[in-house]
Length: 161
Length: 161
DNA sequence: TCCAGATCTTGACTCAGTCCAGAATCTGAC
DNA sequence: GTCAGATTCTGGACTGAGTCAAGATCTGGA
Ligand SMILES: [Mn+2]
Ligand SMILES: [Mn+2]
Ligand SMILES: [Zn+2]
Ligand SMILES: [Zn+2]
Image (tube, rainbow over all chains, first blue to last red; front, top):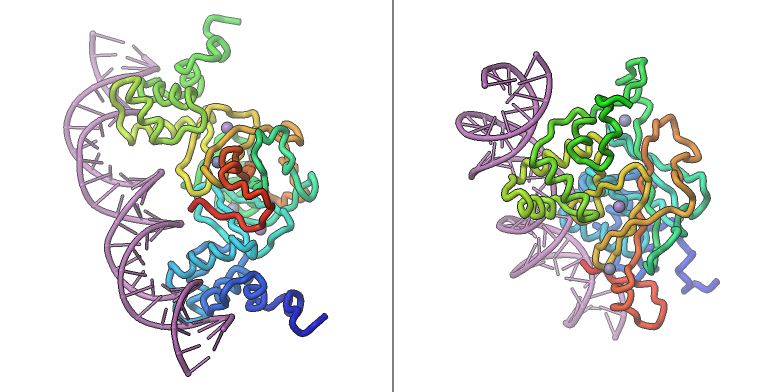
């Protein structure tokens, strides 16, 4: 391995990761990457907060731009639960899915029982070139279930909003 | 079957459907239901247009209110493609999924190869009470594929926006 | 070091959707 | 047929998430 082969020298170095993907290294992008790594399923707003805490100041636009670049390069993943702002994570390439609580909106990672690439082979792809199967499970987390345990199983589930 | 058993007398009658779900029958709600039935994956704006064409006038609020009631009662389903307004359909209960084109945003129905309730049994539900598995396939429709056919398989896929 | 081009900042702006409140209208139980 | 309560209308304000545009600043290759 030569000294000029940078592709595997610093596997966990964000700056090297950016360079390897032909992206300029900036303080903003590094802060965004660290924010996404630090807090799984963070929202853009959450990234703004964390990045500002780290480097003092960053514009909302720069955060959106950075997130967009990182998503495009496959360094992070964007998930978009219905009715809530987009969230970002650095677990990419493992085709994992998400479980969202209807009560509090919490998001947790989950693996599919079907296998590594569940449902990616749809019954009929209609000529589409499918590159991703996004699976979101909806339900209620243990905490939210406890809050509304009326001992009886009732079909009406009240919405939090 | 007595004459007062209304639950299965008019399986395709929107008014009866509403009554069976304890919802007042109004011209607006009927028009909204027909709009959603007539055009798969219609947006709220689309419903406004179609309903106005049918009954002459309806307020935007009434459309949103009606859609909300129908979704709550499980008579229609709301889906929310990334970056586009919510869409509605009357195919409910069959656990079908959606295929969204990254290029033009078109949405088509799709059945899962896995079966009737794919992935609903997650490997580990983490104590969550799962009631729905939402699956969205991402890809490019035949038209959009044709537009960017550069004969070579390249990893960079430009976004339409 | 220099500089073209990439990136960031700032502030206005869009869009979809919600919320509000009073008045008018409609529905369905009786 | 009556009438209480549910629904709708008008129309405007408002929110949250995200985008746009123009000018300032920074990055990295030469
Ligand atoms: Mn995840
Ligand atoms: Mn559908
Ligand atoms: Zn919860
Ligand atoms: Zn397309």
